[in-house]
Picture 1 (cartoon, rainbow over the protein chains, first blue to last red):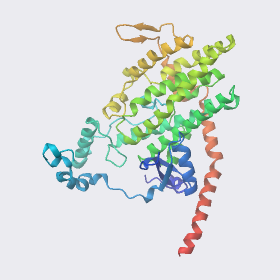
Picture 2: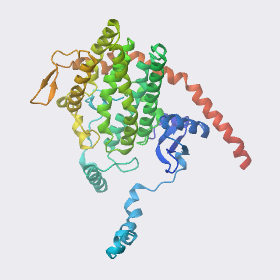
Picture 3: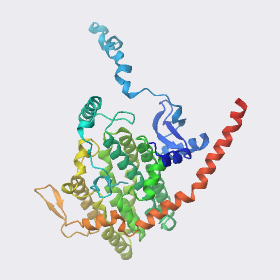
Picture 4: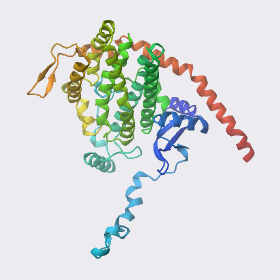
Length: 103
Length: 341
């Protein structure tokens, strides 16, 4: 997107935030989407308005999208492959006598 | 609510499905394409940062953003009656529904933006007429009964369209759709409930409901888009796992479900040719006026001008708020930056 009109437009846009909501005590925060907000206070208020209209939030996190470090999906094979041949991490790798197999 | 954007058949100037000559593509890209195709065939999901064909990206950006525009514009015909709802209960319900539509638009803009276009770019396309919204919203809400009928028929049609999209190959769109579907069913139920109340009321109320049904029935079944044999883009969309069920199949399912609902309500659907066809296992229906559909999609519907003008005005009038919020945020951030220096 090298169009100069687009660049001008983007400079004046509210920054993007990712929203994470914990629906109930005991559960993890789950990513539920993003929104644009000018500052942290607006971001939290808007996250409540947009993503918890059915009371599905006991806790809300907002994070500036540009603050998130993510693995590169292109590296998926290289990054996660080593885990594939370490089958000894799985309980099913171990064959135990029937009497104690409930472990 | 839904958009039938997919089947504009290039009449809105959108590019052909795959017009690039194969010879230009590198070996690496062909490999990526093969892997992409295999993932689609496996029923696997594509995430925002995964490699995807350029036309898959363009098609989805178009469909998701137009779906988002439809939600936001869809707030207007119903917003029209918030101040005139007959009871406090109906007013609170309508407020909640319209608020939901706004929220649905925001989920969808968020999903569309993961494909690379900014919110301002997407809105600019809408405001300059390059992007469309579902043409059902180009009709006026003339009476309170229209509000009930919209909930029953328009949201009903939208739900039928949206449930399969929960399994769309592009995951951000699918996830947004799951969220939307969860919230959507109350939209249809509240409309039907309002109509039931009126159909148990005075003769004037019953006539008002029947009149609204007469005006909204045909536009509602047009929401599923042109017939399959006039929708050349559907095939590519199905190949990519974006579209799961054909226009005609969705339309048939909707009509089948609605005929019974109309009977319970006590209204007549304005189609004398509606008849159960045992061989097909569906209701046969009369001819649909597709020339009117294209006329309205093309800009010549009763409310096209007003709808777009309302959106552009809201955007222009809100410019100072957006700027002020940004300036305020920067001012708040500045002192700490100076302190750190």
